[in-house]
Amino acid sequence: MATLGRRNLLPVSRAADAGAYLDAGPLGEVLLPRRYLTPAMRPGTQVDAFLYRDSEDRLVATTERPLAMVGEFACMEVQDISERAGAFLGWGLPKDLLLPFREQGKPVRLGQRVVVAVVMDGRTDRIIASAKVDDHLRRGLPLYRAGQEVDALVFARTPLGFGVVVENAWRGLLFHDGAPREVRYGERLRAFVRAVRDDGKVDLGFEPAGYARVAPLVERIMEALAAAGGTLPVGDHTPPQEVRTRFGASKKAFKQALGALYRERRIEISDGGIRALR
Image 1 (tube, rainbow, N blue to C red):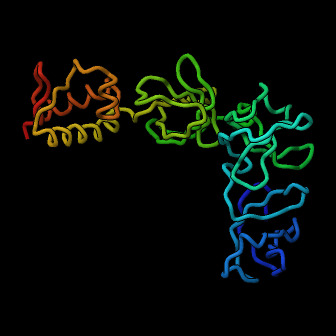
Image 2 (spheres, one colour; image 1 turned 90 degrees about the horizontal axis):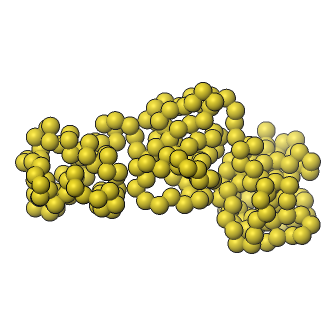
Image 3 (tube, rainbow, N blue to C red; image 1 turned 90 degrees about the vertical axis):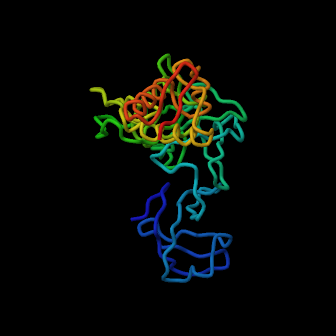
């Protein structure tokens, strides 16, 4: 069954001067404009298309991919503001996406980047954006395991870290500690689950827990030693920022990696730095 606001695999029912019509089942025939056609799109073949409404409120199909579909979240830029309707966001399609005043929370300005949920408006049956992110996150307990890698979209800053949308579904907190660089609002990044709280919120870190995060760093240190001729002027005394710049890791993870290398007798540690033993 074809779904408005999502990608659908739809058969071409017939060709027309304006393009090709796709059979969207209960939604009827939907025009795929000529600019999206390829020679392979003949009647009977199937097309992976996104369905939405054009500026005249007609159902239309496109092979382009929006920044987010219904049920997903993304950071979008305000392209225009209407005194009557709200703000219009660029979402990768010819028609901008409406962010109504009632869904803005705080008023937005032209050129501002805003993290929004893409939703169906129950009042108009149109696709709109909502900046009230928390209102559109799932409730319940997500089934994540400690150390699992997940997608995280940053939408808020807190005293402990960053409020994030986890896998387009859950509320998460990405802790500041271990950040290898500055994290920006609207950034999408990979993070690692630390724990799932009883209230369903997900605690996240920048690095996997335990040896899983140390193993890749161990090899980076050994590669850096080999490139430097076997010695490096780094150790417990090295500032955290230098560790992040040189190895892309936190000072804590770096010290754990040095400890692992020392126990394996792969390095020697002195006041002047470290030296490869094998």
